[in-house]
Image (cartoon, rainbow, N blue to C red; front, top):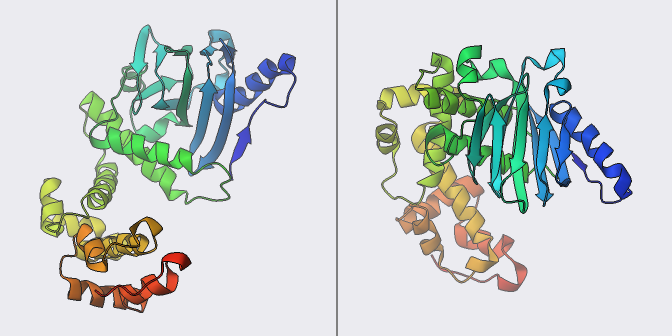
Length: 323
């Protein structure tokens, strides 16, 4: 369950102490400077505490040696920039970060988070036990206040998942804790890649599975998408791909088909696409044989796609649409 914090209704003189308390509960004692956050929404997702922090002219926070407690030695923090620019300082390094980037902070040592543009900004903070990224103390120390660009590989997937989870926090009653584990797998893979170190075997397998799912989602419109193309894109054999997805009790081909049908179903309910022929919607998601698509859709949802659109689409736009 999520909680949202804001000091808008408090007297101005009370707001600094309020945010000291809120931020302190999140990552330990901190000292805000140069203004204050606008809002903070936090939730525990599996092993990760995810916080969505929105600010408007907030300078940042200091974590000095006097703030560090004896029980902080096991905690780490990774910040993901959603918007704005900032600088994270630790261990005599300064990471200049931009939207999508990640950076690591060891909460057992002094650190400073500062906004470089001093304008509106938005970050996602991830707090978790350091042991979960499966790096020893020396390796972790090599990564503090180092910018990790969230544009490719596991870093891009971790950045995207973290930002996506943050968007869902407000008013959240529950969320699958396995998403927290998936996020940690991707973060671990990103940090190991930044150090050019091999991942532990089991973590590597889980990270590949996350990559496979992401690859499928982003290539559904490709009519040539198949188990063979998925395997080739990840430089693994078909046999190994089948082994990786075996615990999910669905074949790769079936997974592709299910996701394509779900995308088609959503489009059929979209009022903005009410005038688009069913066959065009199917082709958009790689299902180019209209008759075959109709049979697949009927099997999955109990009726042909045209009837589904008429029955469940926006009332003002429902119409017969021959396939």
